[in-house]
Length: 257
Image 1 (cartoon, rainbow, N blue to C red):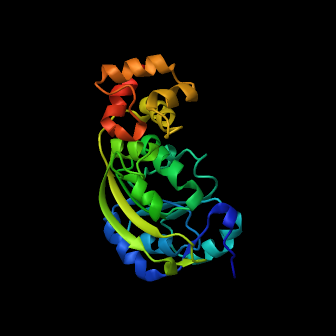
Image 2: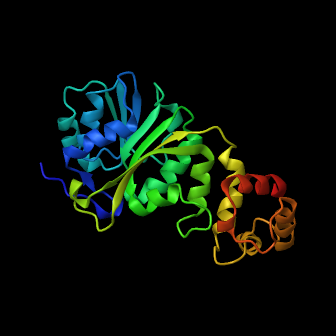
Image 3: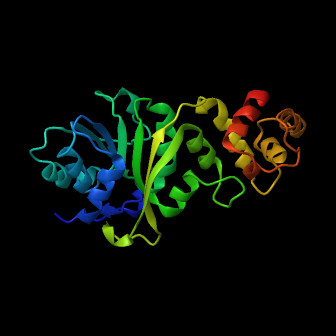
């Protein structure tokens, strides 16, 4: 059965099995693992995981993939395939709870899914995700760089990178026009992202402006209050968002909120 990837869903199906061993190493797979996979596509990665671990929770939005996925996964009783929107799904309610997220993430949900899973799925301890190269760079970008932004702050507050591998467009169908990469990271203890996230998003909402102005335009606080908060944490009132390290955003949020 021929399946056409849907551009509207950001689908780029994994078709080259040679990359699976790299995924397995970066995911640090063990027989007792319970893994969450979002966007199984044609099931190539799903089968690889199922043959090596205890259980795979696979969540797929595209109902047209039900027949080819069911056929591909035939005989693998340790795969629980669910059709639905992973961003709307209660991932924390999965039983048994997943300890790892291993996935070729659809491009259009990669950022929100990673950020939401850091806070919303406390059982997760390790992530190994295929994403656009640009996004993988943003996850762990340093302050004062072009790639550094809100997602950099939120991810780095709760995770540490442990692996990285550029991925050629030839492993996908259709071939994406952008570069891709595998990035692996593990959970770190840290502050609740719900308390920091509004300040981070407000600070980067207008990144060409000063942080205080951006926060005011976003409506989170007045410019004067934001400037007072910056002074309280020892930063210049004219500082821009990309100049603050992740932990400084925590201090700023503590003062502002």
